[in-house]
Length: 257
Image (cartoon, rainbow, N blue to C red; front, side, top):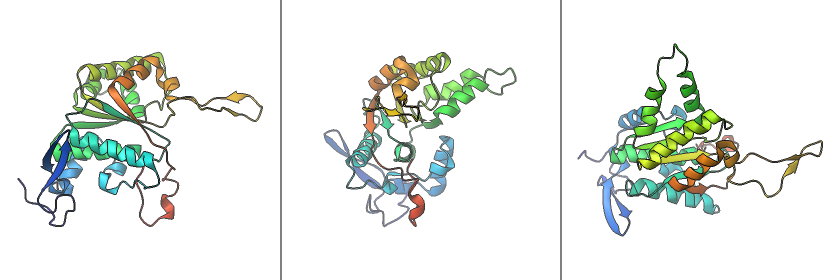
């Protein structure tokens, strides 16, 4: 085992091993302080995590004591990462933009890759669909099969911003195939969505007085995907302010998304 990279780590007290709870059993696992910054960067690049989010970790996620949903989201994310692979479902983080969904998702992947050596991949939902559509071009550099293979086979896959594109027959068929395959193969999937899970209780009205109802996750992804989603993922709602709007008011930026 590599020697501790810091003797002042508060997670492992400089031992290189941190205690974790796995069901009814207490165990230890390599601490994140054992991974050098260069090594962590290699993992993050390999997982296709955007540079803006590569420093996200559990330790710098601020869950206000006044916000129970942020605290619960952090507990769920940590629990998934620490207990993997002994987990029954993936996670679906739902909330407005800027509340920390991507931050927690990347923190999970960081923990799994650097602490447990788990293969992980991160995809933006719109970018993934764009790549698949481009594969139909006769001069495309990659085929649909080449693009889909890592999405289907990687042990843990995160898909960010689910529902960012309106549903079509092609989108519904493609996403249903991906989720069904991963569900049947018992591969963990982590998803995020900015869309509400249910229609708003009260609809707003436009300037002409016509009723306007916001899109929901079900509206955007269709009933087949929606049904499968909640069989394979635990829903984790986050109710908080958009911290990207307030980040410039603080001296230290908070990377919530």
